[in-house]
Structure formats: C-alpha cells, structure tokens
Amino acid sequence: MVVEKYTKALLNALKEDEVVEVYEAIAKVALISNEPKFILLVKSPVLSEEEKVKLLCEIAGSSNPKLVNFFKILLENKRIDLIKEIHQNLYAKVSEKFNTYAGFVYGKINDETLKKLEEKLSEKFDAKIKLQLKESDINGIKVFVDVLNVEVAISEERIKQNLVSQILKAI
Image 1 (cartoon, one colour):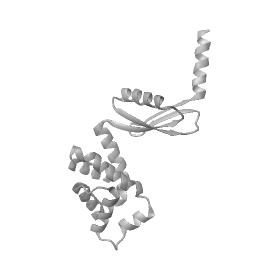
Image 2: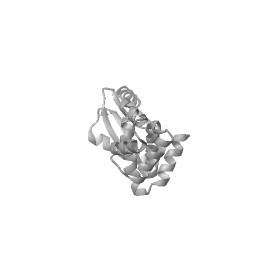
Image 3: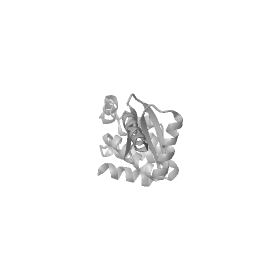
Image 4: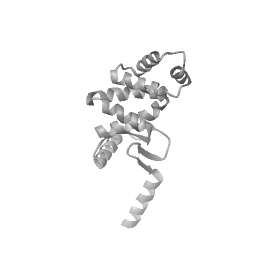
C-alpha cells in the first residue's frame, strides 16, 4: 500500500525526538486536507512547488527539514491528497512505538470514573491509555480506543438486569 510506504519512509528518516513534532505537524495539515480551498491551493498550477511546500509548512507550524522534504516528495509524486490517510497510519505507528493510545468515552461520567477507566484499560493492555470524555445522552457509557480496536458498551438496562439477577440468586 502506498500510504504504508510513505509512513514507513518518514518514520525511518526521523530521530526519536522528532517523531512527536512531525506527527503533530502532519495532524494539523490532515485536519484541513478536505477543505476545498486547501485542495485548490495544493493542486494549483499557478503556485510553484516551493510555494506549496512553504504553505504546507506554515499550516503545519513546523520547518523541520525532514518534514519539508516529505512534503516535497508528496507534491512531486502528486500524493498530497493522501495526507489524511498518512496521518491515520502515522498515528497508529506512533501509538504503537510509544505504547500510548487515545480513546473516547461517550456518556455521562465524572472525572474520577474516567481516571479509573483509564487505569483499568492501561493495566489490561499493558499500555498507557488516555481517554477523552464526550458527553452524550446515551443510557450508560461506551468506551472506544480505535487503534487497539477496543469497544466496550455498558447500558443502564444491562446493569439493572444483572443486579436483579444477582438479587434473585441471593434469595
């Protein structure tokens, strides 16, 4: 896969202390990569390749020479439209490299419960897992860690059923 090759080449070129900086820079570009104005600018025949690279670096907020070179290669090979997929692949590889993963919790819980969920998941997967709360009106909670393919849903109805069955067993 083309995305895999670009991601692997970029990671191999970077020193360990550059990985996070370059990842965050590519994340900024990937965030706006679907905007029509962005697409027009990077595919415009009016702008030179150097001007496009300069624009990408400004958006990224980085002038790391390896990132500049990476943008040049993407533009030369007309692969800049793959930046979002490269970002996703890079995210997975960086998460794996540093054994740190991010996820989301949907529902209504307090900060203490969120921290306990992070601790339990971190223990279970032997990795550092950071969860972000996204409040929603679902009955219960849903935990999702994309890179690890983890999805756990607990509904209030299920908890009530389990509680009733435990009470009936105790009687």
